[in-house]
Length: 477
Image (cartoon, rainbow, N blue to C red; front, top):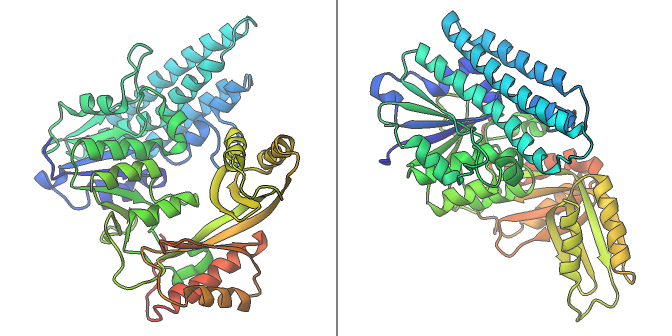
């Protein structure tokens, strides 16, 4: 496939704003040849994957969570998914024939899933069968339904507007056809000339290893990244419902500004804090292939967004973004006899990994190793218990905290940390710990949870606003 094209991913919230999406992204005033040389990778409509799996934030069970837990309510949950998809279709399609096609697609896919789950449900009802291994497959199948619906409907809607769009369904696979992600992408796109057709590709791809198992909810970004790399795209673009801003506009209001330019190192720091500009593995592929990534606001058609490149460094040392984690746990492992001994690090890491906690940051001295963990309190309690059992001579504690980081492609300017500490002190915020790496990409301030919002506002005012007093705000749409 010839380069010169872009590969563009559309997030779920942007997908749900259908008219705006067509007005600002998919069509955006283009006609004829200018409509093409673009490959779109689409997420499920906002809220659909929550209904299929479980709610990403609240944990409310969806179809998968109910089925996996043996709750017979999974059938009603699947009915709600079908109804939600048809309701979405009703609000999008003006042409009755296209709506019938879209509804028919939903009916067939939901029916296939229901038949499969019914068979599995009957099988486990015998009592002699364990479906533990099959549950991963069930989760994968359900995840793919959301993207299949959104991609199919989008291709139909584009056809109604005179665009030659191709629905590229990567979700389907069989047990004897577990191709790699790269192979599935190559085979699906090979027949399509992107100079005259617009591929609308499902963000989920059925492939070896399982997309959800390997990348959790970041699977659509992996599909997007691999398509960009394999097709030699000139640029990768992510369309979101907000700008990549200097801080959360919900906390700093209209004083937030669009970052404009940064590098993949900064994107990695954001991902580490759970604020992904792009999934770290997806970003790695783009960076290695030297493909620039642009993050754009779907609701601001004429704004070019933020460009992320591998080699960008700001012309002057500056903080580009203040971000953090509101809920963190400081796991403190103290062992008086640790000095000069080996094995403690690896032993601690093994326990943390076993309980699935995410290590955001780490520090150590002669006899103490501290890990800052993102994870639920129950998992942290189990980690403490296991470490106490495995290292009877150690004292292991955990305390809730928060972390706020000042991040930039170059934050080496003298006086940054004193200014930051002064701003926090003036706001009455105690600093529990501070981490500053030699590479001058981020400084992490550990604070009490209840002071998180105030800490973000104080650091943004001192390190971003006062550094550029004449800046104009650009809050997320």
